[in-house]
Image (cartoon, rainbow, N blue to C red):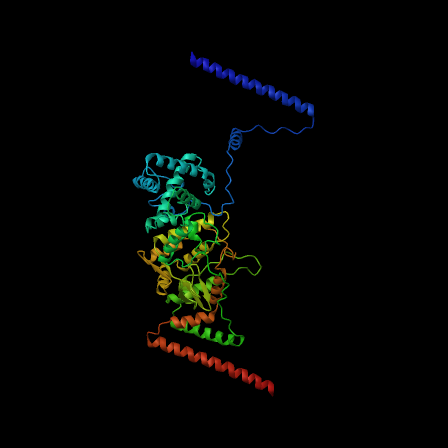
Amino acid sequence: MDVEAGQRSSNGQADFAESQMTVSSSFIDQGQQSSGAAAAPPPPLEEGDDSLITEILTIIPVTLLDTSVSCLISWAGDGIDRGHYIPGLVRIGPLHRQDPSQRSADWVEQVKKDVLRGLLMSHDEAGRREELRSYLEAMEGMEADARRCYNRTFSLMTSKEFARMLLLDGCFLYSRFVSCSVDDITVDRDIIFLLENQIPFFVLEEIHRLLIARGRPDVSVVVLDKVASRVEQVLRCNGYSSTTLDHTSSPPPCHLLHLLYMYFIPAGAGTGSGTVQVPVCWRTVTHCFSTSVMLLKRMLGVGHTNNTSSSSNNTNSNSSNNTNTTSSGVPAPQVHWRTATQYYAAGVRLVKRKLGNGEGEARSILDVEVRGETLHAPCLTVDNNTFRMLRNMVALEQKSLQQRTSHVTAYCLFMSQLASTEKDVELLITKGIIVHLLHSNKDVATGLAGLCDGVVLNAYDPDLCYLRHQQEALEKLCRSSWRKSKAWLRHIKCDNRLKMLAVVAAVVIFIATLLQLLFAGLGYGNGKGH
């Protein structure tokens, strides 16, 4: 009975709907007849169109990011190697909250609570309770400002949960950087180097203010100075930077990684022409010398067996692609750096640049410079934390709305292409430009080659790519057949008599060619005189 009643009810609803459609149709037909030449009505919506309209109209508007924040705490991305961006033990901020599946997270959260209890100034239970409540209220008061520092809204976290997180994480960082300087590699790896594992810097300053108001004796302590001294110690210990910041003239950092990033500003991104102009009168001579060396290469058959010559050939084949504009004036594809072996084969000398604060010394690993025929680059100490630090600073530049420079990204692009193979890494190690603590040179090349995965950089914008002029100077050196010939003679190993005789023969041919040109010129001049 119920089934039949349901069927009758559904049939009745269908009949009613059909009658309504009939009435509507007749009404439309009458309207069309009365309007004469009026436009035909739009066709009825399909079921899919109706669902799309409903879906679009019910979408909640996206909350726009605060563009006034100079350096957002952002999610680095998903289409990348996430291992370089996830904290190993210490989780800070809302992007990496406690994972119940990891027992270590419970232990770290308990450590944070113990640290907070140790910072309390009250000695009795009632006083501690009131002190904690005042701290939580202060964190709730800055919740809105703190949320604006992230590129996500965290709508699932209530105000009290967010304030609790700020207090626990802020006190933990305060204990590690301000109240006592603890040399902990875990803190460096998980907090200083990671973009996603941050809280706003002003939370630390607010916690310091609250503790001072409660009678803490560290009245003269400046939070930024204490944290900066710890960051400088990390950088100098690893040979990344020797810079000392003037915090009175610098803008305040947004978070700890941003403070670290402030030490990686290239000192005078100069033009660095790096080329030595050849006098016009010597062009014919150098051409003859290059031709003689080319003949010598063919005689020895080293063009197919010698790795250095092969790199030089690759340099020739790539030189036509490394121009900023084509003959028609259309912009060419992005400029790429050559490998270290290619530069070396083209006659470019690779020299380690000293890191320090003296005249002519590099302030950080970013201070790469071309002087004449020499590429001066500071030594890069490579370990697993090196890749983590560089990748996260690249992500900081890529994700920040107000960031107008990409110095670290430009440097990573340079190193990823300069040392992209094992042979390149081996060469740079012999020159003192790379020192590594990894298992093999292949691991170094793989890590450096992946620094700019998924990164977009305009290599022609000097504001974004501070090394553009250095790359152009090296490119001019690589196009010089004179320098490539000199480099080939410098690199060749005269380890047998045949090669020694061939070199002597080439020199004789070269001198004979010069004499021939000289006598021909003199004869031409005497002929015109008669």
